[in-house]
Amino acid sequence: MKEKVEQLVHWLKEQVEKANVNGLLVGVSGGIDSAVVAHLIKKACPEHSLGVIMPCESDTKDVEDALKVVKNCNLDYTIIDLTETRNVLFSTIEKQLIEKGDWKDEKRRLGDANMRARLRMTTLYTLANNYGYLVVGTDNAAEWYTGYFTKFGDGGVDLVPLVHFTKGEVRQLAKELGVPKEIIERAPSAGLWEGQTDEDEMGTTYEMIDKYLKGEEIPEKDQKIIERMHKLSEHKRNLAIAPPKF
Image 1 (cartoon, helix red, strand yellow):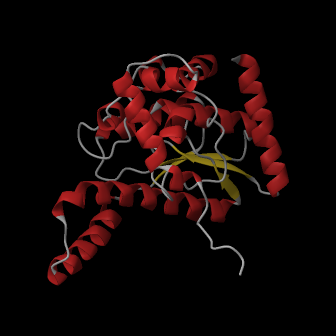
Image 2: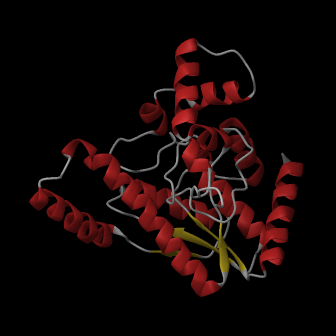
């Protein structure tokens, strides 16, 4: 993993040079994926890297863990609370749809979760524009394959350094980089609502997805879930669809 870390840091440096920008930034959630990326961008651009902590009606533990991450790798950081912004925007949309009789309450939670992810993306790009930085994503191979990310939300980034690493390999990278043990062992969660965890929402585990990606045998139930998620999320891995040139 030491060699992998060196290769990733070198690759990040190359992307900065190719894009003719000043540095790199990442949204830090307190989870293991963003912790690994935070450490990597600090190594790649020691003087020009930034961690962005963006609570949005979030559990205070998420902010505490995010602060542990940035302080652990001595990464410059800023905290931008998006709670009020989310409340104003979501309530405005909700009110208008209710008045039109078009509101679908069963889709409220997912719509809210995706809005939060997209508000965070917008925040990251506003900061990136200010500093002349690239936005670095945190999606790993399991998330990318299954589409477990928000299109134009956490999937809306410039660079995806972890996209070829399984969740297990991300944990190995974290250990190599010196990420705090409590962050490595924390249950994966996007922090979208109270008690939310990735694995509960997906209906399978990262262990099963990792095994599937490696070509190992897994229970049929998990295989069907993974293949279904991959098929339904194909549009997320593609750019906006254009018609053929007429």
